[in-house]
Structure formats: C-alpha cells, structure tokens
Length: 318
Ligand SMILES: NC(=O)c1ccc[n+]([C@@H]2O[C@H](COP(=O)([O-])OP(=O)(O)OC[C@H]3O[C@@H](n4cnc5c(N)ncnc54)[C@H](OP(=O)(O)O)[C@@H]3O)[C@@H](O)[C@H]2O)c1
Image 1: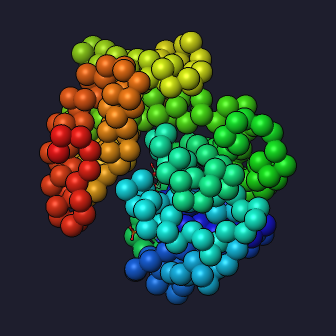
Image 2: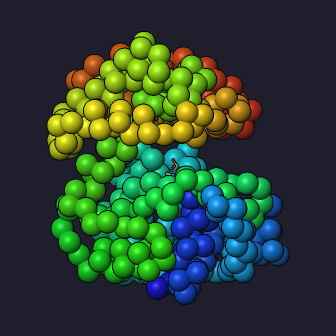
C-alpha cells in the first residue's frame, strides 16, 4: 500500500513507522527541523519498554513530490487543518482514502468540504505518542488501536484492506459498525477530562478522587451524552459509567494534550474540543453550562497562546 502521513508528529509518526515496518511505501509530509531530522537521521521511536527503533523514512515538505496514494493519514492538530487540507490534492487519486485522526467530531466534515465525503474515512486513534524533538517520537502506554469506518457504516473493501494493513503493522484495528458512535465516545471522554484537567491543572488521580471534581467530570460527560443523543448518535446507555471506569484505570498523573498545551502557552485544540461542545449545544438546543464556562475560562489562556503564535483567535465571545 502506498501511504502518506500528513503531519508526521506524535500520532502520524507512530502509525507511519508501524506501516513502514510492515513493508508499506510511506511518505512522511513534515516541515522545519522535524523534516530535516527525518531526512538526515530517519524516524526514531521510543517504545514504553525502552526499545528504540530508528527507521529510515521517505520525508518531504511538498505533497506534489509524494503523488497519489492509496491512503492518507491526516494527523495534524485540528487548528492546523486548513493548510494541511490545501496540500492534499496531489495525494489524491480516484480511490484514495483520507483518514482523519483528530480528536473531536468536526474534522471529517471539514476535510470532506474540500475533498468530498467519498474520499474521507473518519478514524479514531486510541494511542498515546508524542513528539520528543525533531525526528523523535515517544510512544507511551499500550499498543492502542486505530478504528476506521465509512460515514454510513457500510462494510467496504477499502475499510477491510486498511484494517488488514493496520493489523499487519501491529496496530489493532477492530471492526466497528458505527464510526460516529466511536468518535463521540472518545469525545465524551477527552473533552470533559481535558477541559476540567486544564482548568484545575490536575491529572486523572486528583480529578477522580475529589468528590466535587468527580461529579463535575460526570456531569460534563452527561452534557456530551445529551448532545450526542440530540445529534442522532447512538451511544451505549452506560457510556458515562464505563467512561468513568476508564478514568479510574488511568495513571494518576496522566493529563490530556489540551491541558499540556494550554498550560505550556502553546496553541491548543480548545476550539475543536470544548468550543465544539458549546457550538453543537447551541445548534441542537442542548444546554452545556459546564463546557460553556470552561471554554471561556480556558479561552483566556488560548487567546494568549494565539497572540504569541500570531494566529487568529477563534470561538464564541472572544
Ligand atoms: N498524540 C496522540 O497520542 C493522539 C492520540 C489520539 C488522537 N490524537 C489527535 O491527533 C491529532 C494530532 O496530534 P499529535 O499529538 O500527533 O500532534 P503533533 O505531535 O503536534 O503532530 C502534528 C504534526 O503535524 C505537523 N504539521 C502541521 N501542519 C502541517 C503541514 N501543513 N504540513 C506538514 N506538517 C504539518 C506539525 O508540525 P509543526 O510542529 O511544525 O507544527 C507536527 O509535526 C490531534 O488532533 C490529536 O487530538 C493524538
């Protein structure tokens, strides 16, 4: 399979390295010092057990050099999607699947607006991998998974082929019947935890063990649950309980990328996470008081980061 990874950071670099190891022809689209390091030294991945692998990779800063691919893993942050989408056309052939890997529920539609729904496969990545410096990725936690599905849930040959390629590359890719339910289930976990964690500057341990923050976490999850219901997405009836169980099993010090980015003063995915809950709540007539408050409070930090990074602030009321 010929694949391109657009945004070869933590997530894209990790999945891309797995596909290379399985013998696939992968082009890594990157930029700056990361691109230089990939070209010069290859891609270094440090696994949780300390194993370090260095893979020579085919890296480029220009999608025109890569040409049409069977698969595009789109792995930039949500706020980086605009230019990344503009760079997609040279990678697209008649049967190319563009897999969106962003947390949040709006990226597939945003990408489809440019390349058409038929080209987009929404994906849900459950793995933790971070950029550790130019050319270096740190994989934390377990093997994780990457699930993909057609918009309407039909089982297609391209989904079967992609799942087989991922499984072959030691990336578990279980079959799913409703990719939107998968996306929203992750949304229900990551947004309440990320937003509350960022506001409190606390990890799993602190948030789940204080009665007040645990209640807030559960109530924020219920806001997303009601929103999913209003949006016509069928989540399991016990989704809040099972998500809280999942929170209880995580390492006490674990935090979200939203929290880390906001507290580091770098641009974050606040708009696509918390902001998205607020926007969709307004659209569907579902009150989202907890997320609305968190969005505005965290927006102060986000605006400072946006000003530092010279990019426009986004969101409501700011
Ligand atoms: N990391 C995870 O474990 C994980 C798990 C599940 C879901 N996700 C989701 O996956 C998405 C990516 O997260 P991440 O942690 O992998 O982010 P990341 O480590 O910051 O990687 C994004 C990479 O894309 C590059 N990039 C951005 N725009 C580009 C462009 N136009 N051309 C070429 N390269 C470009 C960035 O380069 P610069 O540094 O130069 O901007 C960076 O190297 C997010 O939406 C996140 O929520 C991540």
